[in-house]
Image (cartoon, rainbow, N blue to C red; front, side):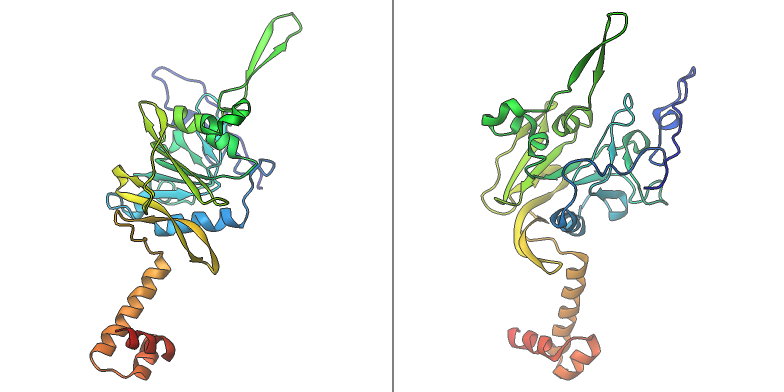
Length: 294
């Protein structure tokens, strides 16, 4: 990691400066913590790509949405170094590029002015207790780490000094950032769970037995578990869809669909298979398949 030059926290004046002016920016804060648990495996690399590449929101253009995975999310102006690293998150009404020109090294809420709107975590044995907080299995309630830990240290003069540790993910998403939609996915048993902010607290939502399993009403988009091959890897993947359960296509799939439609149009006007294949850069086998299915 490149050396970080830390920006000092400026003293306030009257009238007070905004946090954007006085607190560290993404350039001042660390962007990597390799010692943290739950470091990305191959699934944690591929699954976020599929989520970002199939996301289409009717109310927000692509250049006014930001999605990220495994990016430091700094959330507390009182503790500027406290952060979480969501497996995937979406911020709406936020520019794709920081200030319209830069790739982000971190997402710093006091600089951005927008909290994430959706967070998705991929459960693993090392992180599920923190990811689920009070929603973790009742038999393991004693392991609940949702609350802030207070540690008391005696000082030289006999007084007690209290230091705080950062809260766990569920509490950060619920109380600090008030993220409307929080979802967790366990790829080992293919279970999706959906928690929606209601009255300042997450309430677990019932899922549709069919796809979409979860419907995010205000974003007009659904999330389901799709069985298929992504980047050459077969599996059961989280994927966005419409209300009827039609899967949203990736950019690559959209381009391929348009190409095949063009081939069908050319065949329909009587062009020979060899000509269509040469014109569109398809194999003759692909064109023959299209012709036989039309």
